[in-house]
Each structure stands twice: as structure tokens, then as C-alpha cells.
Amino acid sequence: YNVTRGSKPPTMNIKISSNLPFPIDVDFVPGLYLGDEAVLIPDSVTTHPGSIRMNFPRFGLMKWISKENPRMREQDKDVIWRNCSSSYERYMFDMCLNNRERLYIVTACRIMKAVVKTLRKRQNHAANLLTSYHLKTIAMYCIEFLTVPTVAPPDFHLGGVREALGYFLKFLKLVFDKETLPEFFLGNEYLGKIFPDSYFANAHKKYNLFAKENPRQVEAAKYGFGGMEAILEGCYTYASLNESVIRCFENRVLRM
Picture 1 (cartoon, helix red, strand yellow):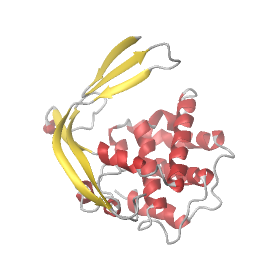
Picture 2 (tube, helix red, strand yellow):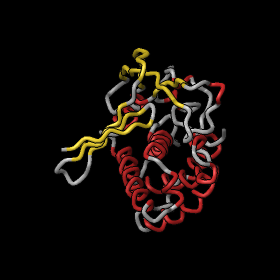
Picture 3 (spheres, one colour):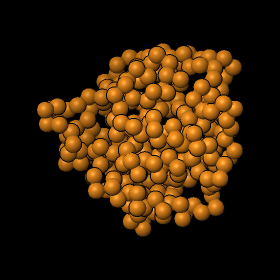
Picture 4 (cartoon, helix red, strand yellow):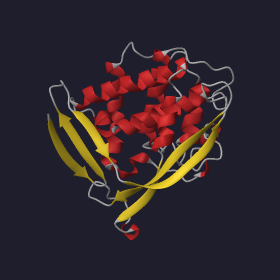
């Protein structure tokens, strides 16, 4: 095997090449352990009978000023600390494991990752902009709006992967049109329905994940959306979508 190390501060990238048909990529990110936060997850969210208390480790991570982050303010010095939401993010997908409707969304997200990978080879503007975390963020909004009973419309049920992919695409188109994708764990007014009284549920200031991207690339992304719909023809449906869910995402989430 062969190990190659790269560095994109503060992340250290390790690529392991072996006799497998694909390399293994591992990212190491140094962080400051801030302690655990105990959160009582409501029974409306869990896949367990009744509420469950979960411990979420919290870390402080460094963000560095660089040519790739020109919008970070010089007055913030060389290093900016932020609270890492990785343990909460992991739980968002862990709670999908025994829930069929949430697994529809996870499958839709995996399909979109494959689409983005394919379209990048064709220099599609939308695919060139989107990262894995952008797609996971939209998936988390889908999980929140479509499968959490205290957020979703009354008696709402997701019909399958085609429908989940339809919502995913509708959300994505709005994100491109508004040139805005708010960080899921910052300023999310519905987050308390999943993580009540948690640190991130009380974080009210929103942050646009596209803020650090090239503005021209963000603006151009909307023109590549049609290519995504085309490559997915027959795999999604818009026919049975609940418009109130889409309007709520547009008017409440994308409003910065």
C-alpha cells in the first residue's frame, strides 16, 4: 500500500492506495474538546419507544484565513474558532437506520452524490459548486421537514425514494435560485424539535454555506440544475409533493 499526506489547514488529508479498486481517503481535523452535552431526544424523533438521553461531544475547531476563504475578515485574526456539530450531524443519520421514510431520504442523498460526481466530468456548474456537506445539509433539512412529526404537516408520510428525490430536487432548486444554503445547525428555528435545549438549538444566527464560495460560481449553479433533472429523468416525481413543505423551506429556512 501507499500513503499520501496532504494539508488544507486545519485538515490533514490522508489517502491510502492499495490493491483495492479505489483509494481510501481519511481526514484528520485537530480540535479542542469542550465537553459533552446531554440532550433528551423526544419520542417523536427517536426510533426507540419513548424519549432517550444522548451525550453529544462538542469540539472547538479552527478556521483559517486563506485564498480559498477570502470573505473571512482580517480583523478576526489568523484563526477563528467555531463549535463543531459533527456528533449531532452523525445522530441525524443514525436516527434514519430503523425508519423507512428517513432511509428514502438517505438513498436520495446517495443518488445525488453519484449525480454530482458524474456531472462534474461534464463541467456542470451546479455539480462544480456542490460538496458532500452541501448535499448532506439538504438531506438533513428533508429529514427535519418530512419525517419529524412536530415539524412535518399532520399525518404526512413520504411515499418512496422517487418522492424523496423530488423534495430533494425542489429544495436544491430553491437553494440555487436564492443563492443561499443555511448551515443546518445554526439559526434553525426547528432544531429544538430534535435537539431540545441544546447548544445549537439556541444558536439563532444563521450562516450561509455558500458565503465562502466564489460568488460567480454560486450564481452560475442555477443554470446547471436542468442537467441534474435530465440525468435523473424517471427517478423522481414532483406530482405528489406537499407544496406547504416546499413553501416553508423557502420562506422560513432560506430567509437570512
